[in-house]
Image (cartoon, rainbow, N blue to C red; front, top):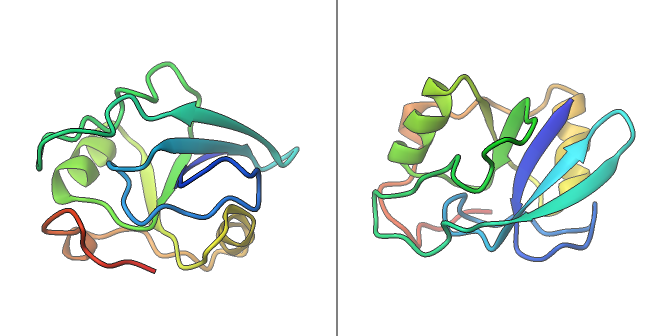
Length: 123
């Protein structure tokens, strides 16, 4: 499975999960079979509130699930309409997050869990 996680800086599995999907500097795609990683720059990082284009930087990528520290309602709607499974990160690093996902311990993001604004506090 290919899992996309917003990160602050690419340190492989030790990368810290970014607190907000749309404003992340980059994404890390993890192949859970090989545990290989690949970083993708977020070309849509600087956008007006509510104007996040979550798939703009990920276009053409093979992604089965996205795990976020936080996400706005607009981005969540766009991802779910595109058929993406979106889970809430509850750990600091990508490695811990992938282990929790594999164990079935991460919750799917529900509309009530989405942020109302940028700067919302997350883990």
